[in-house]
Image (cartoon, rainbow, N blue to C red; front, side):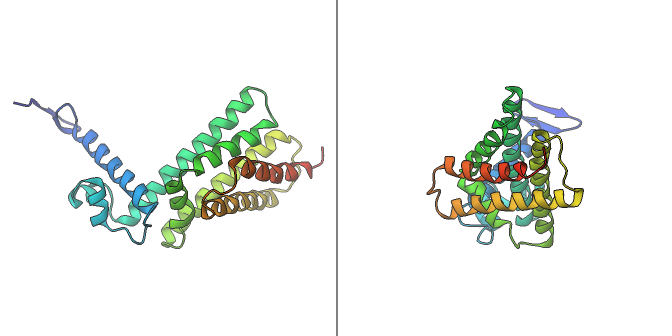
Length: 216
């Protein structure tokens, strides 16, 4: 007979897996199902029933961690952008550690567009979150601002004598993110027709063009 142990903080353990571990696994299973369905058939065509079928779990398990499909969309979107941002930051830091200051732009963009080649993730982050609800709109705006801040940190590192006023700097960051995001979205809609290197080159030119307008 399978040994059953009681854990005061995590509930019962079955087969070496605690209640907390089971819940985490079930949550991740629904996250994977959400990425698959939101990234293919789309958020609006996805129901709890289809998510459960994709995950191979019942709705009882779904509602243990998510209140509705919008809640799952927010989680999938956040996890996807966290992954993209982590890869971009890691690439930039690697270039910085190698003292390739000018190469940080190319490294960051290469990491971004490489991650964007995951079409399901790209569709969720750049299409499926648009116009869903005020909550998702606010999340989208917040994450856009985070990416803008990341770009500006890189810009200031490359140009210590950054002289643009704070409010104009903020708007400039948003504008850069908008340009990069729109080129990425068009790449997705074109079914990745252009080489990734071309996307990196075009957007690197845009960022360097901004930096070159600053006084030295």
